[in-house]
Picture 1 (cartoon, rainbow, N blue to C red):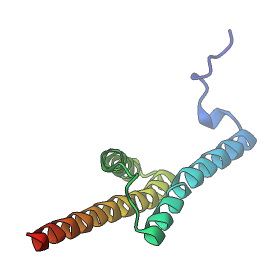
Picture 2 (cartoon, helix red, strand yellow):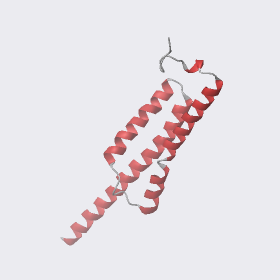
Picture 3 (tube, rainbow, N blue to C red):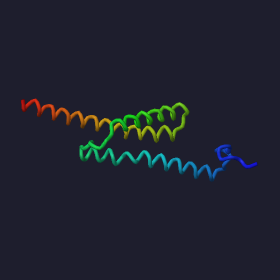
Picture 4 (cartoon, rainbow, N blue to C red):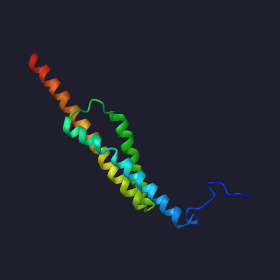
Length: 116
């Protein structure tokens, strides 16, 4: 009887398959983590956060924080490291967005007060 895909343990796959699988996992972690770098750079250069969803980044950041906690609890260094870097990047986007929007709101309020 053939094994189903989920009945094979990772340790039974052999070193070559494990190496390929590890490479895929590390590559995926690097790509998903690095995907936030352009957004952070764009915000720092342009100071424009109009297109950023605070709700989306808040939920995503919470999810990444939970991944960090999970990686710490199960002592999985790749999960912990990749998500720690992602957490820093997503928090950067979130904080920069909130700061920029507060500044914009303050400027608008100041200009409305001075017109009165």
